Image 1 (cartoon, rainbow, N blue to C red):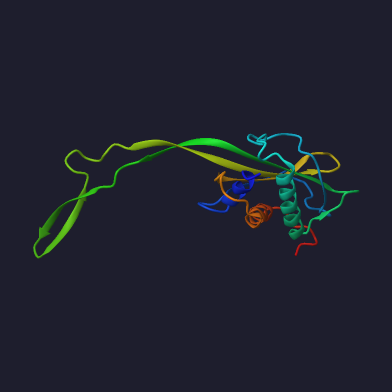
Image 2: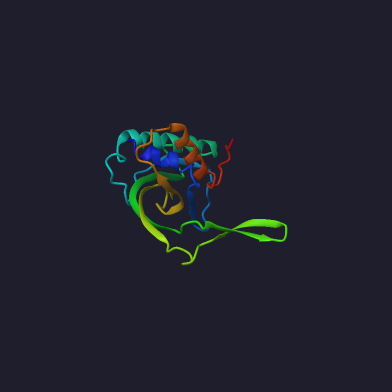
Length: 193
């Protein structure tokens, strides 16, 4: 449980989350904007993590998505929905290589006429070689899917990914902000506030 929410907390920090939205051409989103929850039919990498895949985290995510959809004018309707909504959440361990050169050093003082100044250079041997190191980190992904309730066809998918600290505390407010940020790209229903 303590892994998914830090994922979403960190989606709002650092250089910012990566957002991606895909929408099927020619669909009538949002229409009446009536939706019901559905079970996900597919999986994403890292979703099988038992610390993520549990009822507590699922309920928190459903609540955040319900709140975000409500703000966009969407209404939950269990008996006759136009759209079926589900989500995926996963965390993967990743690696990246970072290269960095040492900064130039102060080498000498140069005087020209009445003015003196310091110069920077790499010294006799030129610039240093790059120091390359491998950094391991965790990347979290939240994906919200909306399917046409009649055909079952996927018509909208929003994905939010960023580096996460798996040791961070759960913050429902930051979770809600992350979900809201993603759902801002969803067409608003008629009851949008």
